[in-house]
Length: 465
Image 1 (cartoon, one colour):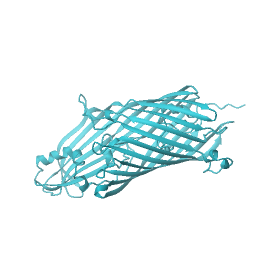
Image 2 (cartoon, rainbow, N blue to C red; image 1 turned 135 degrees about the horizontal axis):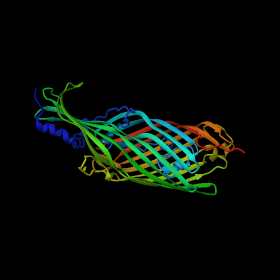
Image 3 (cartoon, helix red, strand yellow; image 1 turned 180 degrees about the vertical axis):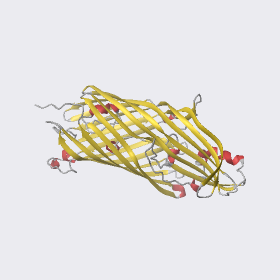
């Protein structure tokens, strides 16, 4: 049996440069990655997740996804506002929310005629919010934070051992458990904070696979795990002007250094075309403690609502957000005492807007109807983000439009003058990620999120006359 020449083995260490080279269109493939909820779940099938910690998410319910992920200045009594912890004070009930998601990606390289579709389905969000008193509320939630899910291959030939393939695979990701509290000392001001525990593991494998089985192929697998806390805070100012309700909000997340670990394995194997047969372990590092640095962020928002007298929901709400994430602060894994090299990421800027309305309260001809579609809350949203994803050095622009509906499934009175509702929530999103270069990867995607919001009242006494 012949072993691979040493110069071929070193090629596997520069797989990231090769997958971005001119050879990429010759053999790029993307594979379906199924999601699962364990220590963390994989919920990405995007080759762009090869960079950094992968594809990130806000971890929010369909009610906010239907608004384009907007909510820094949104005040709602029925939902849990993870986007701004100060919004917990707006809740009036004990609220339970959960949802699942289905995503479909169409990957293209226009100049090469490459076109492939992948999809995945996964658990997306669980949240529990509660109001202890009129001036204090809190919540906790479990949701994805970031994920990797890709399979990229590049074919080439060598004078030493003939046809071979570089293959880079990624899976796994990180989840976030969020625990937050909000205080509202006066009706027009609230402040809140979140403690987020980030945990999970992502796996990246780089393989040099030789077609001629007289030579041994080589694999290098690296596992990175995070288990640490990060924090964010927010505030809201709000008040009424006649029949209108105004809200201004701001948020800030500290990011910073996170406890992390790395496990690295290198081994040789025989490639049968179907399965790998391991031959020898070249290197194994059981665990190396260190750190990663997550980016800080900040954002501001404005909201305007039209109130309806004697009705617990607004006729309509219009909200706008602007958020900046300092991705240039991100650093990958570095062993304790070392400093990770600076990445190519720049800051990302995200602008979004959302509209929510109830037809029965907007159109006078419907104000006496009890039809469920007339009293449902319809949501529309749009967003544009530039800076988080890269193919070469140029930033990708992500554009997305959203639609959602919250259908009341339970209406009932708790006490005289009090009324609550639970909702079935559906949101749909259609988006694109691309930097405008025909030889680079272009992603068109759509999402469907289905969830439920259940409201009840705990911790507060009913008052009757």
